[in-house]
Length: 132
Image 1 (cartoon, rainbow, N blue to C red):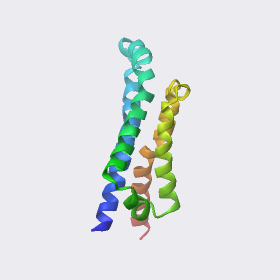
Image 2 (cartoon, rainbow, N blue to C red):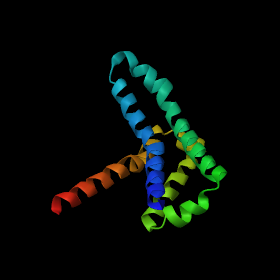
Image 3 (cartoon, helix red, strand yellow):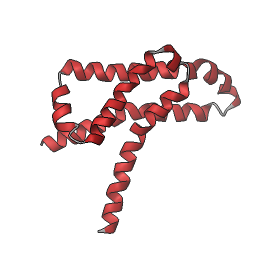
Image 4 (cartoon, rainbow, N blue to C red):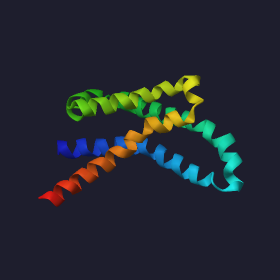
């Protein structure tokens, strides 16, 4: 049962942060349309890092409020890679700094590992199945 909870936590964690990358990609596709281009580039793109930092803040407030930090540090983040990923998500709080918030592409770069992580694990499982 604990493995199920840990798996669910990682899925929730990745989906919480990966949605930002998907939203950024959709907005980039919409900006190709001449009608939406100026609106997205002048009004929406500057707000994206603020959106990302709000998502990160909400995630960490929820974790600290629920008091699950001990469970995360002992059970979920048992490997060095898992600890690194969780610390990487904590660095998303740096986008409260106005200098970092002005560069919207930095928030995209920061969120990309969370989008790629589930894809890497899925591909890894399929490659293992093919080789057996």
